[in-house]
Image 1 (tube, rainbow, N blue to C red):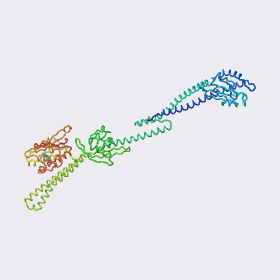
Image 2: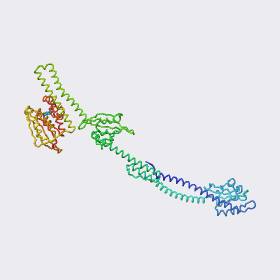
Image 3: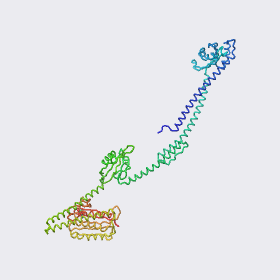
Length: 600
Ligand code: ADP
């Protein structure tokens, strides 16, 4: 902050100059006045002495001291000076000064050796002033020669004290000083006005710049008359334009950056050297469960509960190379986050780090599913292929010659081949459904449910009869839904087939279709359920039941010709229709599989 205002600076300089000039003038005036006063007094004293020398009677070459004393006393009464008559040598002939002056003061003046006496002896008028220790005042003395100049007969000495003269001098000096002071006051007032006038445009410019610095870019810049200030104002105007332009650019960049960060799926988190959060996009806030308006500018160590992430941030700030790690974030649903950290180095030397967070839970899950799928497919294919290979080798080794073994082995090979075919067909079906699900290109039409379910019954009836299972269908005639009929028929056949497979002979399977309102959403849907009185499924298996190759009882499924893909196919068919499939089951009582389809 500045210590002195411009106006006061100008005013103080002006006052200092004024004071110096006034002091100088006062001193000069006072000295000159004193000199003038002295010279006037000397002149008066010389005139008195000269007048006296003219009227003094000179008899021969001598002056009568008595006559001198008489004349001198008369003059002394009016002129208020002391007059003495001295011999040319300086010795006193007649002393009259004591009538007006203090005798001691008069006596204090040396005579013969005095410079002014020598001057008078030489025919000139001598004068001097001197401090009188008796009265403590200044005293003046004049010596005038009497008689011929080349050889004076006597010397008239006039003495005067300066009391009255000094009093007058003091009065004059005081009057002049008062005049000077009045002038100084007027000059100071004028100087103040001038300083104010000079400082005003500077103050106006300073105020405009302050408003500009505060962001008020529309502030008008004053245009002072002074050339230098005018160019300063022009420069400030130029600066304002650049500031506005730069501000707009920064604003644009800021909103672009905000838009980019906001639209990123990856979470982006920036921290400074003290680990305070300086920037955070919505994705990062979502991933970490933080509220940006609360955690902004607070230390990461305080707001992030995960210790691994806190450690990672510390390492990222200090690392010269980008870091990468996978962290587990615990929560309602555990998530795996891939974090990449890069240290920030700005020009001020303060560091920090940018951490990019990527939720790879789904990717990892998919990767696991893919790995399991490959392992499961290999495993599923390996058993029938090994069986076929084994029996073919046995036949080649000679069993072909034995008609009984021959027939038995060939039947087994055919059965295993059928199994291979079933698995491959199911896999191909799954792949087709997934493809149309991904492309959302499933062709659909409005279909009457009663017709479709009747076709399913017809298809499943032979197997039901074979296992002595009763089939019951209940479906309103008018019930319709948008669907891909062949795929939905396949899904229903899979469900009814399972119900028949996993039920004991003599039991019944119910196929029921109904129109329903989706709870809470207010959306109409069609529900078709397949209920059986079979073995039922333990609750622990239900969450994974619709996964590929997942079986509750592997041996039983294989024995019954199951591929472990049936329910997975149902799930994907329903997803491709924008519907779903659910299961309710109680071991020993039975299971109900229900599909939901959006109603027309
Ligand atoms: P699978 O070809 O083995 O039947 P699915 O995918 O159709 O394969 O069924 C997966 C598993 O779910 C089956 O192995 C079986 O254990 C169980 N399951 C399916 N439907 C039923 C049902 N109606 N009753 C009891 N268990 C069933």
